[in-house]
Length: 157
Image (cartoon, rainbow, N blue to C red; front, side, top):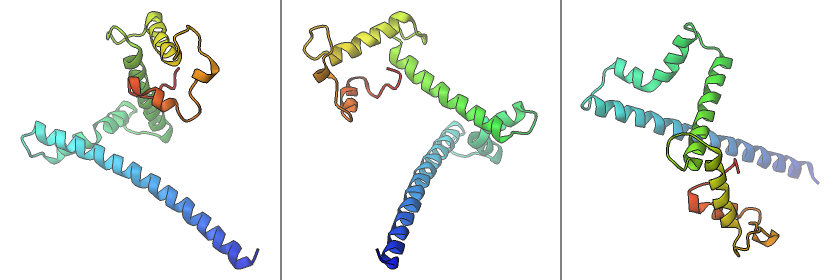
């Protein structure tokens, strides 16, 4: 391979990597802006269409300021990471409880889990013979279509 061709291919690979990173950053940035605008809209509605700087500041960063206050006025990267991880897992837990909780009481019981398993088993047992055969298991990449009945994918199943 000629040196110029190799350099061109390396440049294309680098451009692709940079483009992918920029795309991901743009998506994260767009989600952040959307969240900011939602908080700002809520603050405006709660205040008849106008807000002061203090109201704006509270709407934008109330949780972050609480974390700083709860940690003696300073927040380390590790403390922030722990708080973000906890919040992420709490959201996941809420989705799982909502998905499995058959009584709507905000708790999970063995009966809730067994009931959910029975629903999934029945969905997979397409010929209703009480057994799941290999040909009834969705092929790789097709599982999402099988989960449309309950509104999402289940990483806990």
